[in-house]
Length: 128
Image (cartoon, rainbow, N blue to C red; front, side, top):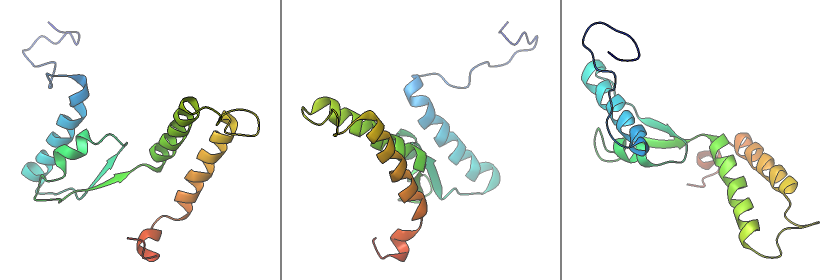
């Protein structure tokens, strides 16, 4: 008997494998099931920067049939993380009047505001 204390036979787990691959397998199942059960095709994949899930579904309905979109918050977070890593690994960047954690937070915030203020500008501004 499992933790659910269910008396009938059932499967407690619907995934066997590494936890790192779970998101990719789950995304594939969702996209595949949408076509089989609902005759529906997803055209966009909202991701968090980790491309494992997207790589599983980008060609599921045909070559490059799914577009990857990313959450602005995740992009903003990566900017801060990479600036902190750069500061840590490059001598002379940190310190008073230079790249401090407070300044990185401020840059990260302004970066997020700039992206949110210009959503759709790639097409409008002919930057593609």
